[in-house]
Amino acid sequence: MICRPTTLPLIALVITGCATVLGIDEPAPRNSDGSANGGIGGGDSMSNGGQAGERAGVGGEGPNFGGAAGNDNGGAAGTAGAAGVSDLGGSGGADGGAGQGGGGQGGSAGNEKVGCGSDCGSCQLGVCNDCSDGDVRCVNDVAQQCAKGSWTRGTLCRNYCLKGACINPPSCTADEATCQGGISCCKAYEVPGGAFKRSYDDVDFLDDGYPATVSPFVLDKFEVTVSRMRHFVTDYSPQQFKSGDGKSIHFSADPGWQTQYPLPATSTELTQMLNCTGTTWTDEANQGQGTLPISCVNFFIAYAFCIWDGGRLPSEAEWNFAASGGDEQRFYPWSVPPMNPAIDSTYATFEALEARLVGLTPKGDARWGHSDLAGNLVEWTLDYYYDDYQSNVCDDCIDVRPGDDVRVLRGGYYFADRYFSKAAYRDSSSSSTSSPYAGFRCAYDIH
Image (cartoon, rainbow, N blue to C red; front, side, top):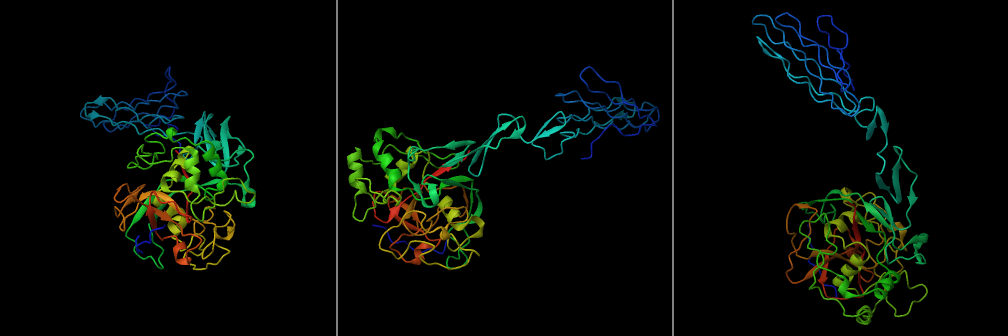
């Protein structure tokens, strides 16, 4: 059963050789590499360096030298010529030659990306391209590649996009039933990351002393469904999980999967665990049951599923960031303005007798499109639970202190009252507990 929480108030100017040197304004001779040296300093004791060299040859650094120093008796060194200009930015001119009065100073560095502007992503021969051939990216649900300096129209991903490619996880096959709105039950959306205050809403949870920064990540739109779990049961083998599996690149303290984590020995034992009292699981597939959120999963089953499906469980900070709308610090995941306390059954499933189909209340979707971050089932996260956060400062942090092996749950559940649906609320349970109130969703690293 779910452990009752301790309620916490926690949480360009282009240089073209225009410097005037005693009226000399003709370009200096060009060298074999396409660069040119500065002109010779005049004879006056205070002569300036010669004119800057012209643009270096394509691909070269353009090491245009400053003019030689003036050479009158005791005269001060001439100042160096301005730096040459290069497509890729010439290096600074070398020091001027030493006169009796001392050496001249080196020229300044050449301007970068001539003809393209400082904000150009890829400059070639003075032409600004949107990208470099071979680059890939994700724009929302579209996977794009760069061809001939421009982004292609790309491919709309049915499930989600990672590292410029559409991902089709094993829990969603081609014949997978869609969830609400005709959307794939494996749909996942990017959470852009940023800074916020953990477990804070400026209404009921007023301790703003726990700031956090979260890197961008991708999070399942829906809670994992019964139909997705069926694929896992079919493919289940505890031997496939190795130490370190699922370790996030963002969490330095994350050990990933540990071989001592207990798992059912067979798929038969797994289904027996999924059949706890009040479960959404059925041994036989029933029409209409597939898009219910899977319940009666303990932490270890939830974590193993996410690893098998190409991801991991979200950290508590990630989950809290998504539900709070990041720096908006929302009271509920849907609250606009952020302190709006409006809530009823059109926003979330709470004070109900059973869980409902995932995504059934789109009015309650969070800032980045995620459904049921409040109500329906409370959700597992990676972190161990303590009344106080491990540190006042969190930079992609997770709490890995094992303690009594109690993990953080977030989001409230169908049988609970509205208080548990607040984005700042924390809950907890033993890692080994299978409850009809608990489910999960998976997260995925972007980089």
